[in-house]
Length: 80
Image 1 (cartoon, rainbow, N blue to C red):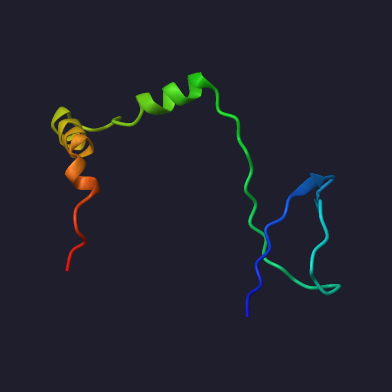
Image 2 (cartoon, rainbow, N blue to C red; image 1 turned 45 degrees about the vertical axis):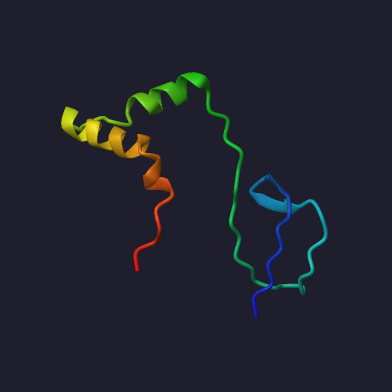
C-alpha cells in the first residue's frame, strides 16, 4: 500500500527539512518529488512566446492557429 503525504520542506545545507511532522518510521525510505516556485520575468515569457512557432513554415503556423482557434477541437466527443 502506498501512503502519500504532501508537506512543505526547506532545503538548507544540502538537506531537505520537513516543516511539519511526518508519519514515518525511523530510517524509512521514501520517494521525493520536488515542486518549486520559479519566478519568470515578463521578458522571459515574451521570449518564450516568440519561439513558439520557431522552425515552422507559414503553412504550419496557419494550421496550428486554425486548430487553436476552433473551439470544437476542445469539446469533441472521445473516439469510440
